[in-house]
Amino acid sequence: MKTVIRVSVLIAIAGGLVACQTSNKNLKGQEPGIIFGEKNLGRFVGYSEMCAQFTGNRIDNKIINHFRTKYSNSSEFEAGYRHFINYTQYDWATPPECGYVNGSLKLTYAKKEALSQKSYPTKAPKFVLKDTPHLLTVTWVDKETKTTHSFNLSQQGKEGQTEEFIVDDNRQCRVVFQFKRGNRGIWDMTCKDGEGGAGSFLFNADHNLTTGSGKTTFAGSIAFKMVRAT
Image 1 (tube, one colour):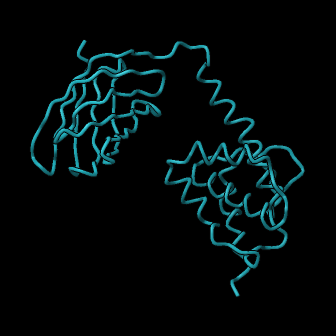
Image 2 (tube, rainbow, N blue to C red; image 1 turned 135 degrees about the horizontal axis):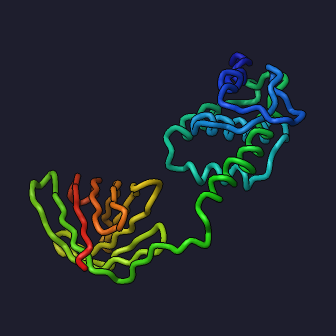
Image 3 (cartoon, rainbow, N blue to C red; image 1 turned 90 degrees about the vertical axis):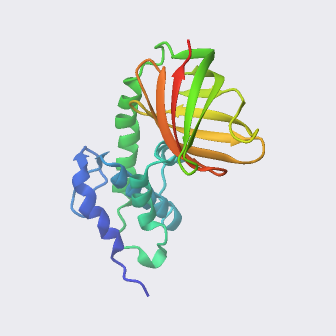
């Protein structure tokens, strides 16, 4: 049988919290608070799901889904979340710290997340491009060759999409650019023949120069530079 002490790991990460006044204390007598650090947050979300499964102590699913969606691309969050993924009821300490964990998640959702959303006014004008000509220069790393492609790109807010264009060997593809924090983003290529690719990119403030890299299923590693033609 597995040792029933694993849950004490939350005591070690309690330093990532700022105390707030509620009635649900942890084993060290600390009140729930705002959770800092994506790995810590992942642990709390994973722990909360264990609480729901084994004790019935659960919080609104929208809170759990919010964090799991927002940090779906975070390796730190995933590492924290997976800490509890193989736990069973035999791993549960007594008493579990469900009130403390769920209280902290509620506070983080209500305060920290709300504040971060307010920092980006919803009424601010969005960056918009409509069928704008672009030139794309691709370095096919494995082939040691370069090709140039032209197409129209449309962008609305944090997502841009090219029209279909010929990429390689008469292969018709389309690329979607998703703009993340700062000047970074990820791209995803889908081709009519089922091939594709994905990677990351950087862009300047005016969105008229983009550089990136990644891999395709049909030609291996690539690097690219894209400029607005007008």
